[in-house]
Amino acid sequence: MSDRSKIAKSISTHCAGLWLPNYTSCKLKTDPLYDGVYTELVSSELPLLDIGCGLGILSMYLRERGWKNPVTGFDFDSGKITGGRVMLQRGGYQNITLSQGDARAGLPDHLGDVTILDILQFFTDLEQEQLLRAAASKVAPGGKLIIRSGLYEKNTRFYTTVIADMFAKCTFWMKAAPVRYPTAEFFKKTLAAERFAIDIRPFWGKTPFNNYLIVATRGLE
Image (tube, rainbow, N blue to C red; front, side, top):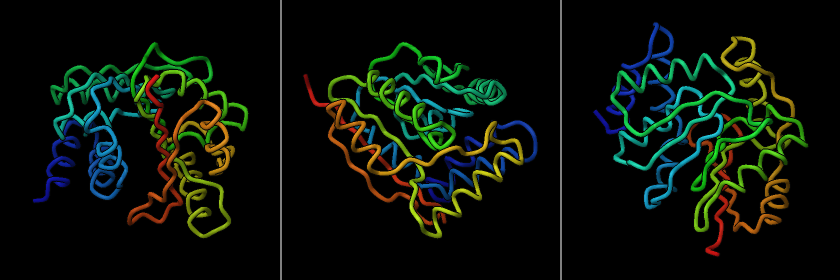
């Protein structure tokens, strides 16, 4: 059994119900997101704020890989936060806090690294800019703002991404339908104004989606 499969099995066994363990296991085995974020954070000694954390699967994955920094997960969906807390308790994962709230109304106190993964499409243009600037203010000198987002591009991958997000809304896995997909230029313009060095690269792995990884690093001040 591969390390990825072992981690997927370990985390998914803490899920409640019948569908969620299979979903979690499949996502951990096939989605390049978790290893990608781990690779970016592996040498960091900063705490992490995970905006849009859902069940907190990223934090559990990081623990399974031996990453011990404090993690604060923040999500709008109270059901996922409740489910994630149960998983944390069952798995004995330490130094992870999950809290419920609306990112449009403010973010938890934090200074360190920040992740925003797969949620920006559910915000309007103005809300995206406000959230990005708010998240940037939570990044410590030398820290990273790590974002995964589908980008607006007229190609098959983009339209597949839209269909998948609409399906997630129809099945009630997500609370809202997508509103606006950001562009690469949006990230460059907004984050450059916040004095970040920016790297944007395709990050779909073997998935059919138009996902990109945006890594913005704040300089040492």
